[in-house]
Structure formats: C-alpha cells, structure tokens
Image (cartoon, rainbow, N blue to C red):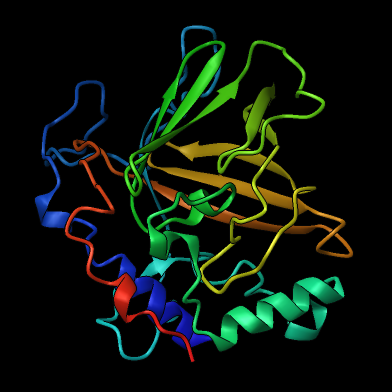
Length: 268
C-alpha cells in the first residue's frame, strides 16, 4: 500500500512550499503576547450566534503515514487510507469493491483521478494535502480548494436534497446546525471518485454526512460518515481534524500547468 502513497505524492509535488504562502497578518485574530496567533483561544461566532468556521484550513497530519522513499513530509491522517483504524478483514467491502480496490493497489494507484488533473471528490477533500478555505454566511457555506482551484457549495437555507441530483465530483450538499455542529449531507457524487489515495471505491449511491465542529480558534474536527450500500456492507466513520492557517490565503494551483508526472505512472 505504501507504493500507492508514493504515486500520489509524485503528482502533488507541484504543491507550493509553506515558505511561499502569503504572509498577511489578519485583523480579528487573537494573539499571544509575542504576537503569534493564539490557536487555543475561544471559538469565534457569527452575528447570529453560530460558530464561525471561516478561515484557511489544512488537514492535521500524522507523521507516521509518510511512505518509505519520500522526503518524510507528514500527511493528513486519512489522506492515504480512510480505513487505517480498521484491520483489513474488518473493512466491510462488497465483493466488487474489494476486487477493484485490490486492482488499484496492484497498479500502484496509477488511475487515481488526481493523476489526470481531475478534481478530488467528497469526502476526500477533507483530508487533502493542500489548504481549503471556508467562507460562511447565514444561508451558504462555500469551500474553496487550493489543490484543484475548485469550489463546493453547502446550502443552509432549508432546501431539501434534490431527489436525483446531477452527478458531480463535489456532489450536492445541504447543511443544518445541530447546536455548535454544522451537519452536512451530500449526495449525487460521481462514481469515478476515489475515497482516498489508496483507492477505496464508491458507487453512485454514496451518501456522505460530515459534522464540522470548531473546538477552539485554531482547530476543527470533521467527523465523516460514508454510507454506500452498493460498495460497503455498512457505514464507515472517521474524524479528520483540521488546523487553521491564520495570516495567509490560498494560492493559485493549476494542475495542468507544467505537469510532468502522469507519464511516469505506469502501474505494474
């Protein structure tokens, strides 16, 4: 499985280095005595009393996930494998999904959509290795992805999910507040998407529920539940934590610009 991780890292080499990111002290950021952002300060709230999820966020990393042969950079905990907390025998695959997963693993993940500059799907965006920016209003949350310069809309105006939404990489998302937690339900996801870098598949029946909880100023947890009876015999749930990146913003990242990696992804 580590070989699959190597492939994915190869196609993300174009991600800007940390030192290249914009450095602009933002107003409204609580600070310590030495002027650094106070990431453990209280959760900010909007005028209507809701937790404010706005900001630039990055998946909290798990250093032990760096595959052998790479530079050792830490990756978001569930970037490589959403089932990392389960024994292989406990992953509730449907037979066809298990076969497809093994095929992708044997081919070192060469057919990962992002290796062809296609978008990350939901919920894979929650554990991406590059930043995302959340913009929150009273009736809409917009999530901007630096990695493929794309966006996602979460409607908070009370509308129901469409009965048969047009399939898309990001799907159709509606949300509601459950106390301090934003609960988002997404359907209508294209079945070409991968759930992680190792290639866990999903079908067109995928339903994703995300629970966004900002636990202090600089940290947020996203509990993700995958419900796809065509691909898995039961739901899968995991929590990807996020760390705020204050005093910075997204950069433009165009996958097809100077892309040189895909020709080297030949599989077995």
